[in-house]
Amino acid sequence: MKERTGLKVTFKDVTLSYDGKKDTLKHLNFEIPDGALVSLLGPSGGGKTTTLNLISGLLPATKGQIFFGDTDVTKKDALARKVGMVFQNYALYPHLSVRDNIAFPLKMQKVKKADRYKRAEELAKLVHVDDQLDKKPGELSGGQQQRVAIARALAKSPSLLLLDEPLSNLDARLRIEMRQEIRRIQRETGVTTIFVTHDQDEALHISDHIMVLAHGSIQQFSTPTALYEAPSNLFVAKFIGEPVINTLPADALRADLVASVPASILARAVTAGVRSEAIVPFDNGQGMVATIHAGLRQTQKFGREATAELTYNGAVLLSTEMAGLPTAQTEGDFFLTKAGFFLFDEAGALIFGGDDHDQ
Ligand SMILES: Nc1ncnc2c1ncn2[C@@H]1O[C@H](COP(=O)(O)OP(=O)(O)O)[C@@H](O)[C@H]1O
Ligand SMILES: [Mg+2]
Image 1 (cartoon, rainbow, N blue to C red):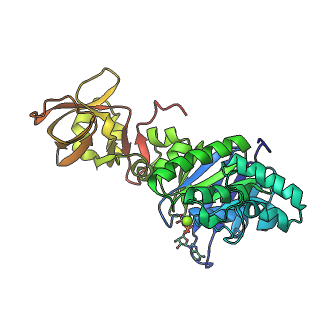
Image 2 (cartoon, protein in one colour):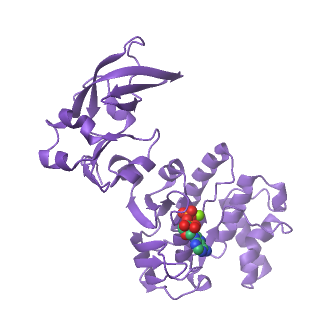
């Protein structure tokens, strides 16, 4: 059901203040490409919902301009912007059938009954609830209710589909199933979709691009791979990835980095970040940044997944690559791979690492 090619969304220096004193969103500049699925990812209070409401027109920008395609929509209200919205609480009408829930926005537009039901049935098929059309929302599971909410949001063929933490009320397994469904529905319709989540795993799995938002500013806006392999700052490095990246004072490693890091960079390095898969027991010849002599404690073995704690110059580093070492081994020479090794300056900006990444 490809209905439209989607719509590019551009923010030019957009600022939002709720109280006229403090800026909740500061100078946002971005472009969301046509037909993409973009996640807004960040901690609670970071400004995700506020950004979504600026896109939908529910909130007016305090400063700056917003474009849909080439059209300046800054002064247009939510109705004129024609966006479809899905919220965490499905917000379906409990007394209406699934068919009538999906058709409801068309009824408001005075579309003829036969036409709006035809459309509702097409959309029900798209979101896989076509066998539930006569039921009431209360008879559906949470995942099915959210499918209906998505179908309803698509009823008017919106210019954009906006979803604000739509999976937060679902249990873990359903969340995984539904995130794949959102990806599929987005591909099938081609509608530009903006998906809000605080769950990095969710964002990494479904998005073409991820905007990391924290403290009202964009920390990084790039592909999932780029966020992981080339985080632009310490915040992103720590927010993206499971297990959380190891961090330690650059001083602890300085002597071991002299041969591989230019002196001018090393002089500015304050924090080192090392992904758990970047600490390996053997030099595999794929570009090592340092050799460290460290204490070793192999901690857990859940099935095949072994983790180990290395103690090194007062730091404790987690490695996921030590499976196969003798369990009795308590120290040794270990290697840090260039991929997954980063240095950050005093402000937290990336100053070393991430450069082998293909943008
Ligand atoms: N209506 C409002 N009035 C005043 N402050 C608000 C309002 N809505 C949100 N905020 C504040 O704006 C900041 C960003 O909130 P929000 O956009 O909801 O973040 P997120 O969706 O990322 O959790 C928070 O500090 C929040 O308390
Ligand atoms: Mg929110």
